[in-house]
Figure 1 (cartoon, rainbow, N blue to C red):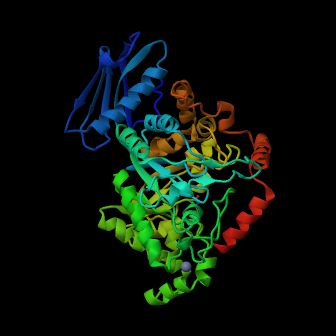
Figure 2: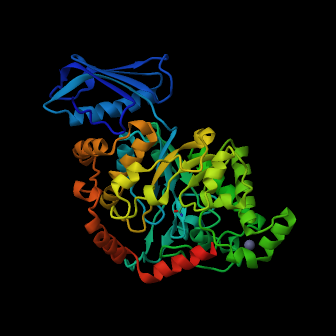
Length: 492
Ligand code: ACM
Ligand code: ZN
């Protein structure tokens, strides 16, 4: 049987007799696109290869676009210039298939982002989660708060793990830049979800506007990775006025229904000591600082909801036990299984499991097969609540990712493995088959400017794993950082 090198693997493929001989030049004149309202589902498409060419049908332009990605893969992997005649009927398992890029630790140029977006579109991702603010940089132009750019976008040096670059690092995306990214994604039927992390991971905001922290002390942007005690004060009303002012401009640029408000890794040390935070807890009848974080998230969600938007937050926000039920939880590290409880009680969940979907760690730790084999409807989610898993999202954090080359190496093919889990029904997934299809797609990815990790590194031999892990941690992470991380985890 002919090999159909398509990732994610389509729902149904029937190979027929005969083949279509690919033209010397573009295949475009031989492709017929048809809108057919009888085809159900926004992303569903039906594709037929006959001796004369290729027809793709869908009820929407989005469906046609998804089908076009399949054609691109088929054409670029066809053997001997012949495409076997076939019929493909295809639609996604999950409605949410995201990829996250961190532009706070290191920024990407617009061209680099577009290259990544094109590669993601090829695998039928439909959400770009854009991490735009953190302790080491605030990257959005916000006209109302110019110090976010003047101060918050520039750190004095970069000291991630063992890497030191002793010169300022800075930059931000103008509104026009961000609109261009939104437009570029929209042409590929990808929504852009911007993330402004809060109340933790906000050193860049606090360096710009120190009055927003509990102590009001001046502090510089962080130059190292980690979790830091200075967070937005939940007791001061000016904090919420600031957030709303920023979100007004965020919503003006990003039309997406979802806005990510972070909520991860927020140590409560300062909240415990802060008279304003403590007074807020009394006033609102909140039992502890976790509930104060719940109050914080709900207050921001109320604001977003009033503007027709919905907040997404990392799973730590669930610890309060009081999140408004229309918020979306993104699971990344959740030992207590709160995300499963959230789904079981009717809440919506996006799955970005650290051990499987974080592609900033080496293949020796998170092999391609490990990423591929992960089932996002995790244990603990009751069958009746499966529909509350909106989908999956793969992440690339950029403390150690300064270039597009490194990003391409870390994310591909692991992003593609997440894409197949997000799009293809679990029963259709087949690891050896995926590896074969993925191998066939490497030249196309390279042609698009994304050079994936070499095949030999996708699933390191056990004997090599330890060596590669040691190399990664020696190169990137020093002992001080690991100790600081463990300390801060205890505090969180
Ligand atoms: C996270 O990785 N702190 C969401
Ligand atoms: Zn406070």
